[in-house]
Length: 352
Image 1 (cartoon, rainbow, N blue to C red):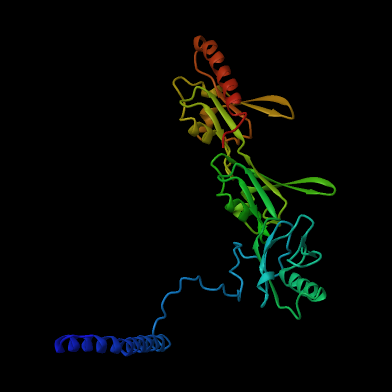
Image 2 (cartoon, one colour):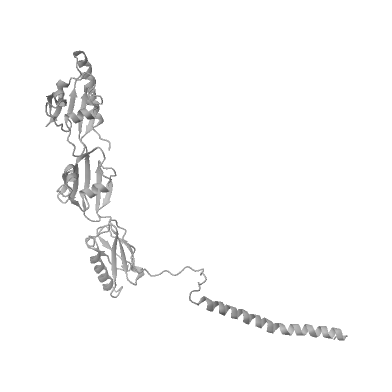
């Protein structure tokens, strides 16, 4: 009990303060709730950005296939082959939408399917109908809409080798002409010849066809520019060579480039001209025909003066000019023989 009026008044004020705390707290809670409602309404207002969610957004169902990755794109009538990669899109059924590689036996199989569907030999449109019929027949979908796209061609290899800049393997997503195949390998190297071999395998065994590059370069629309559909091996043979030895500034072996006709005057120019004291009136062309070596005497002095025809040289011909003087004849004979042997060994295995 308070003993004085002053103590009684002090106790009364303390009681009033305690009694008013409850309504004040309730009022503060109501204000906080109102603020939350206002913030929620503002978040639903159009044009107001929603706060970022800590959860990842749900995955949306695919509505279309990605663009075809094959370059060049396969035509509509492209026959699907073994090991090709295809994309299968089944409308409204994401579990069946996926990339599938055609198996070695030529089939594709989607999840939940009890058996595979033959794909090899079908066009994408034909495979779409076959997959839709199979899905409906197994009760996996009702009137399914299926789309098939070829993503990667791996069943039509063309192997390119020989005297090309970038030998390797390409895929014939469509029939390619021989000229297109050579261009895809970067073209020919300087030491390439004018012969190209196209090898194929069939039930009758391997078959090899030879084509002339000189004719192909002059007229691409000839029989020397066949269409290749895959399974072929293209080999560009190296250039054939002629040999220039004897009294020349730079004797050596020189390739017969594509479409080039080699003659005696051209061979002399490639060898840098004559050295000192050449016996030009008693030149020789050494030629091997049907395994028989022939020696054809020529007068280079008359040829260089255009008094005699400029004779053509054939593959593996040896143009030989001795040095004047009897004392030098024996000394140069051994040297010329060594040149011929050395050049023959050095160019037996061409470097591309």
